Image 1 (cartoon, rainbow, N blue to C red):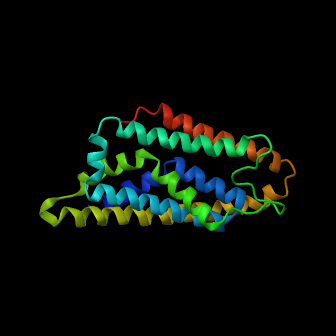
Image 2 (image 1 turned 90 degrees about the horizontal axis):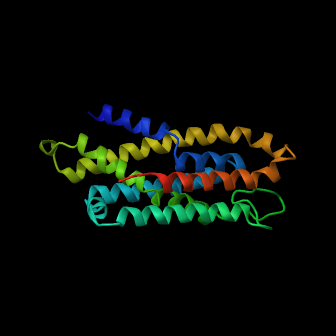
Length: 206
């Protein structure tokens, strides 16, 4: 049963989504260290959703009228904010990394990864729909089983995303030697975040 769950969790991680796109882009534009700090934030966000699901709070959240829509709206606004930071006149790319600019602090890297994960309601919906399929009351306390499944998924997600980050970081040198990359970077980042915001806004969801 746990092997089947692990396989389902692996498929989830390998499916491109906001978290993966964010981590790959961060790795390519600023390097693997920054991406790993961001990944810690993403993992903390996953832990947040796991805790809510395990204690049954997510069920309450999804049952309250407009709660899902409100959370999704906050996520859309956050992604649009990051897109604006990349595209605004005279501004800098959110992930721009040059010798003339101050790098993002570890706290900012962590918090951006955290909120990218927390403000994605599809994660909560995924956990809420998947966990019950693998929890059997006769096997022991439901809370213990739910937390166990959550930590298995978290470890798989962290491991796979770490491998993706270290692979993506290899192309950083190419981008750093490409004279057109600094100009294109802001538009690439703005387009990525605006596209993610549009996708989340149009998602029918619940």
